[in-house]
Length: 321
Image (cartoon, one colour):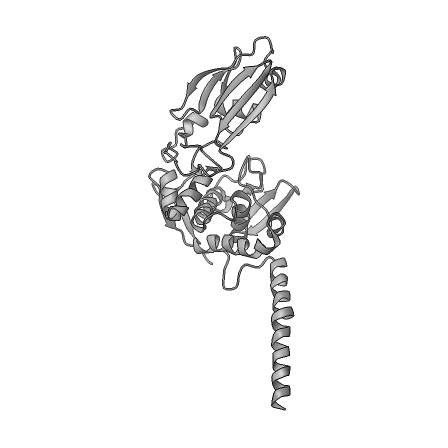
């Protein structure tokens, strides 16, 4: 009898381990639930989904998890993910209409949109899972949820006010002053050295374009096309360039030609331009691959943020959880 009881107990335990628990895990994943014991922030964020063309009302925690998943590789160091969560939270709260922010100027009912060229990218948990290997999905999502929940309420301020928490993929050795890329000088968006992003796969790229294609993209005649840098930053990123009697800002030049960076050199041979870029993105604010590099050297999320944003503080704001 005792032997029979032991056999029944063993079979029941095996059934529980092999069938019931995995089924519950899969169910919770599909329901989009955070890991057990975690809590999301209960501020509601109105998000315009540019893919589905609909307005979503998301709890702030859910929104931030989707931003971190979309904007930063989940295999990055945990402190880099934490820094990204703090940056994303600051960006969102600064635009929250219910808190007096300006919202998304392209969508009057939204606080932010999911277009990365305008606000912050965002993807759902299901979309994130589709991009990751099956055996890493739950691990990666847990990492992202921890980054969001463990930094709950943390924001970046300058002189007591939320900053414009901008970021980019790879600076290529140095970030830039805001006025050299855009127009306004912002005291906390200052150029800083960044020897931490050399492991980025986006560090360099070469793009080849026919002369006629370059002229068309820059909206000048091929016969008068010439490229002459008028001003550049100390790190070599273009501020102004003459493209044939027309002066363009570096950001416009880069965007028109579809280049990763305005830190670019070129060579023309046989009617074809070869453009070689260093870095990826506008290079203002936090360098994401640099954040990962700093984290792997032992720096905390707060130290990462204070390196890339000059004279700021990481503070905790209070709201009803």
